Amino acid sequence: MNETINNIKNRRSIRKYKNEMIPQKLVDEILEAGTYAPSGMNRQPSIIISVTNKEVRDKLSRLNAKIMGSVDIDPFYGAPVVLIVLADKSCPTYIYDGSLVMSNLMLAAHSLNIDSCWIHRAKEMFETEEGKEILKSLGIEGEYEGIGNCILGYRDCEEPKVPPRKENYIYRM
Image (tube, rainbow, N blue to C red):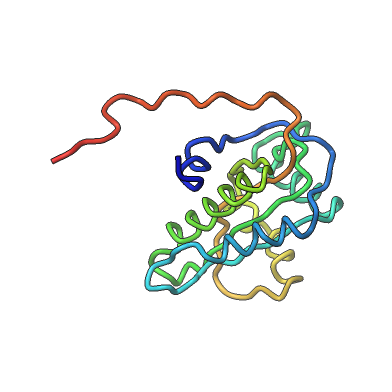
């Protein structure tokens, strides 16, 4: 089977991670793959914030948990790296374009034997004053919306089995 198709078929979301940092070289490869996601008219409206600093990662985890209505959990499941995808709302295809970046990040990670999961609430995180301050501190200006948090790490659990695909997924004419 083609390696790319194999990666697409076998990537699974992981929700339990080891406390082991990913080498920066691999994080950089994953980030670069994200920048090659397709976008409407090649506008490239997305940006990626790479978080490898544990203190910042934990701050973002608390913010995400607060939005969930809980303070006793880590919505990032112990993953040491968080890649946050945001997209410029002035672009008509920004949600789709940012979603494609998320997909590229997760598939690239899988191809490098790094596990991942899409964690929601990025939109809500960066609508808060705390989230806006983070963007401002990075010099990010404009009307950006959080698309997703891509957590990365090495799983601390069994590899999930690939569930069968549903019936009537594909219709042909």
